[in-house]
Image 1 (tube, rainbow, N blue to C red):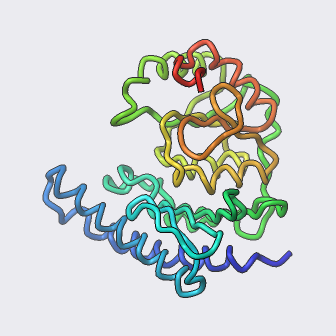
Image 2 (cartoon, rainbow, N blue to C red; image 1 turned 120 degrees about the vertical axis):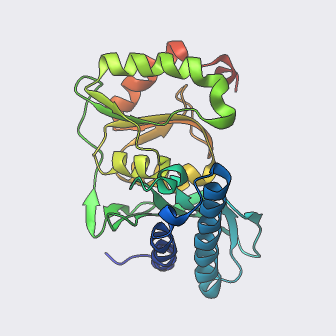
Length: 269
């Protein structure tokens, strides 16, 4: 099965960005040990990686638009928008913690049609095209066969920065999941967490307060791998906000388990 031309360009862009990101890791230790200095440096790497991605795509598709974490929205003359997170897991990267990725999604007329997630440290490439399934390298992947929460391994992300208002509700959710599953993992990169659900490495995932570029590629990977994606209340997922994903039965069981702890503002939408 041949890879779609848009995916091929996305892969090329991701690999070029990974060169920028990995080269930057060589300089982490030489930075001043101040939060501002280190954060500024990582922002420079983010911006450089994002510029590399956009330049690579623009060379092939000058009329396409972009929604990118660092540079925001730029509308193209075409109906295609590339949704880009050049470095998902920045805090991990900052500390040399090897769990981060590049996430690129292709949205056509408002719907995500293609996805690329690349893990530079493991050199793992996850791709998906709508109707064509999900792949890790050239191998088809499927969500796990997990049929509920018993024995399940569940990924999550902790509320941070502006989302701490949900911390108490989240901690109640976390306690419930800990008590009803085999374990919880918080690796620190939502895009990679979703890729792991698609590959069956975890059985489900949930997080609050995400942005479109965190999830755009991951949700297509999960659904094309036979999984389900929705909100905490089981509604259709719109890019950004809170998300639940997993193998079909585990997804349903997780939503049911979390229901008593969902903040009212999520229910009112």
